[in-house]
Length: 101
Ligand code: SF4
Image (cartoon, rainbow, N blue to C red):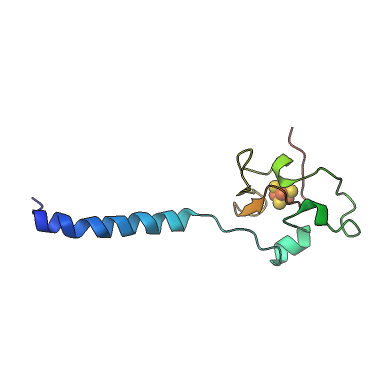
């Protein structure tokens, strides 16, 4: 049986574990300077897409309307399947853009 003293000692430890596990599961944002992001022309602001290098870009295309975007509507960021679940900006864009069906 756990004594009251032992129980009181466990509480801060359990709280620290909860915080640590949340941090471990929080996805990192995609760094536009990462080699994969550079190769795909990822930008956090779709209007800044390099249209010379990526002529496929069309006005109005954003991560938020891409089939590979896994965020909720209205969220500023969301996970992207192309970037292994890392967070992309809903207003961002990359050359793997695929319009949502
Ligand atoms: Fe954005 Fe789609 Fe490119 Fe992912 S694949 S970064 S959601 S445009």
